[in-house]
Length: 432
Image (cartoon, rainbow, N blue to C red; front, side, top):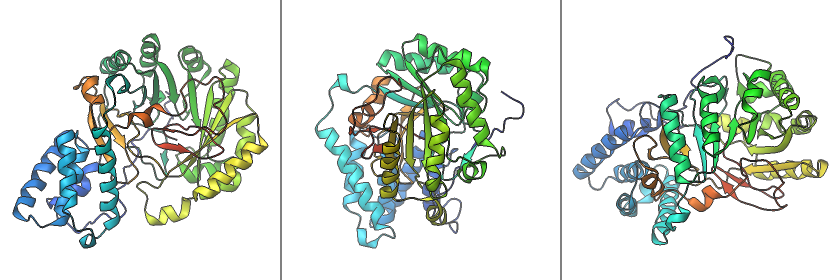
């Protein structure tokens, strides 16, 4: 890694309506703070559930306490009993008495979908996390606006990472995305990639490209199925409007990364572009930049997701799906021989098997407070993790493979991890 590479643990924004007037030990304040990196652990959630349960026993008619306890039960390694108790708690909540009735309705919908999977269980041979996203490094050279990654404070080491790889391979995982942060800012990453490749996993690297060199490309190209690189503007100002960094010229660095892939003959690059208000009219120029390189095989246009964003930031950046879809159609007509995909924000319910840098397994959903702890790769066996009722395996299994070979059929749709495709696009991937 270059000594000049900016490296940060990206900030973890609080929810937009966080109530700062509550005392530090107020149970509602503890509930609000549960998704901060230091608190997003089984230990914190277990203690919080016990506290909420105690408070609810003292005030059994308190709808807010019932709602919060239901939420925490679902988020903390939920089993069938926890899911059914969460449903019972939500059934007694008077929606009209809540400050955010839509949140209650949405959580009830999630519980209903989980219970439907419990009532029609997936056969054991189908409860395999074939696609896994591993945020293996919690450091990044950028802090993207509206970043929703649930970064963990802890970072496992190489020995533990090899254990995780071996568990995934034995379980039947075929596609592994190594993401972050930026994996290339973590020195052991090359050994992990080699180990995963030797174990038979098809590995994709989701990187900013910040530290790509001819030497690293030579080291990586034989072990990777694909590389993903981000570009959100054809000029430094437009790029910086979304991907904040102390380096003001990320566009030049991105172009250098593509040229390195060209020079290495690595023709399996997927470019990720987050479509936001500042770059909506810049997409044609971005297309010219990326498609001038032979290494680029796929381009994914992600609708910006204000999962933790304030209303002000959402108003500034959000683009309606119809506009994103129209742009994708127009670009598809302009480049009919290219693979261009559109990833929308409308269906993201529990479709991740997402390993954090700490080894904790989580899954995301659409709401800004919906991050669910499934278990831990170092403490649980894969059968236990795969038995989690919150995991939606048909959704996990759909989408683009990490190996870039032949184009998907025109008009296919599907969900992998957090993304849903929109016509004329094809199945999408997990994160920008």
